[in-house]
Amino acid sequence: MSDSGLERWRLILGDPADGSLGALAGDAAGRDAALDWLYGRDEELDRRDIRRRQGGTGGSRLTTVDWLDDIVRLFPKETVERFQRDAVERYEVHDIVTDPAVLERIEPNPGLLRAVLRTKHLMNPEVLRLARRIVEAVVRDLTEKLATEVRRSFSGARARQPTRFKQARDFDARRTIRVNLGHYDPEKRRLSVETPYFLARNRRHLAPWQVILLVDQSGSMLPSVIHSAVTASCLYGLPGVKTHLIAFDTEVVDLTSDVSDPVELLMKTQLGGGTDIARAVRYAAQLVERPRRTIVAIVSDFFEGGSEAALVRAVRELADQGSTVLGLAALDEQADPAYDRACAQRLADAGAWMGAMTPGQLAEFVAERVGR
Image (cartoon, rainbow, N blue to C red; front, side):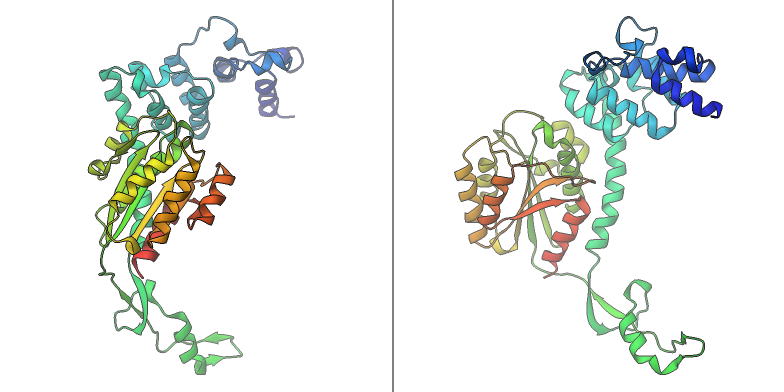
């Protein structure tokens, strides 16, 4: 086995492997100490009678600042992000997002954004100012990515009439091949295109649609809360779309006035608490101006803390009047749903579309409806 292979096994097995694999030195010892500092906290090691890393059993010579400096120096970026995410989400090392000295060193990433939003109530104004840098950086990246998808979805629908304006995205491959088949050379197996054809692209100038996003701000829905804020910001101001963003737990908060600023939206969210989805749906019903041109998207895990019968009734009333009710068990980049399936089935029976979407898929869904 190569030296690098032995080193990897030693890092995995820890101090008890010193006798057979040899002690570590230099950067390898630093990597081992960094792993000890974090994963030695795992209480499962004692329960399963697995060697416990030294970092979790007593006073460590590493401070959080030292540890952050070391992992950035010793590990690849993807590994560093995983360590930081585990520190704040798995082991609740809150000083990563509440200590000014740490915040000044840390590189923004989605895991830290979630940690900031969970712990911002613990921060004094100076720390909150530094933490906001993380929120702004990650939201900026998310917005730039999603804005491209939204613009693509709303760029216009192709019409079936030809156009003299020749753009690659409007190339009519089917008609071009059909018309030029007479120029096919069977020996060379090549089709010569003498006349390419293109389709016109119509812009949508229609009566506006309302998109009302109802976002469950319970702790388990945090990734969806983040992406809902960014999605609403990207949809806001698009031609043909009037966007509302409503956050709810047992109370309902209309955040539409801040929908153009997703950072401010997220800094105003209050995670946790109960869930009263029916109350949020009733509030949305009051906002509906033209039912048949309204999409009400409920982003929730559908574990209703209020009256489930009232929720089903409110959804049925919206669907019966012609509104499109969309129940989303997840709205983030992975779109991994975790939800109350029994409640979701009752809502589907009441006329709602139920599922999980990425923000880009939601934008496509909205664009399809607006383009009708």
